[in-house]
Length: 442
Image (tube, rainbow, N blue to C red; front, side, top):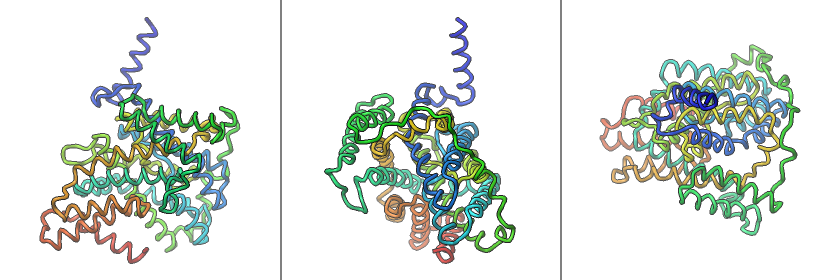
């Protein structure tokens, strides 16, 4: 009897915080979705330390910073915004951090961390003043549908590339056992999804991993648990060792401005894409609690810089959890808890093969591409910008660039065809800023 009461109390507590019944979901679905999201994001625990170590950062310390920053920012997303979205140091932004700021421009990784910290503070201010929220609201509904489809195409393309099914824009080696494993995994995942199997994406990840390990195509985990957690000290608060003259330099302004532009529209794209996929948009096509979601992202970036990692951002892989039925912050909390546990179970999580997560990402791409049906292709001033938006994302390997060119083309076409009443001042201002950005930064 006491156990039953304890269980009911727990469910009531979770219901009160995450409004599960209001969102037509339950604890089991949310936890399963959170696990799925984590497993599709877990690669960042390996890849991010590897990329940032090229800048001279301690790889073990960055691993800890990656896990902690992902957990903290994802907790904020779950609690503040009640959204099923995971956050972690973003791909592309970490490459810019290591290759451009440090290796090409010649600055220290401490300088790069300070740039990320300043970016985070600016994002917090922009969020508190509602400017970031207004940017999301000013994007036309047709472009929002295009963003969702574009994110889906981007996710699928990433999955195909990661598994070497596509190599340099061409078909990969069809005799490669790992490519065959991916395609077999794609078939397994597709069948499970088509049958509406509960937990289909998570089941497929486990099944493909087991098949790969059983056939000795991928490595078995070197143990399951490890208490030998690396020290965070080599990167923790190291940004404050930067000389003040560098902090107030023109180069710092350029670096921060670039980070702001890339991260802003990557985050906007991710939020719009996963929100539309999860039926989280309101009747006007806006994202409820967008301000809270943006604040979680901004806090994540700021805390991440202090801990010792590159820009933290919302992950498009969150769509995998949403595809599994995740609708609330409990999904995010589950993902965050697993990032914390990964500090102890790193050998197990690292063993998840790319082939397993890639198959899932491709199917998630299929799910999100359904938004193409909602785009108005009858009006070319809507169709062309939408097409540019969802096409440029995978081709340019950037969600942000897809949104930028989509907004630019939308504004220009509407002005050129005397449809001024269909665009707002914010779109015109954004378009001008984009043009300035291309002139100054390329």
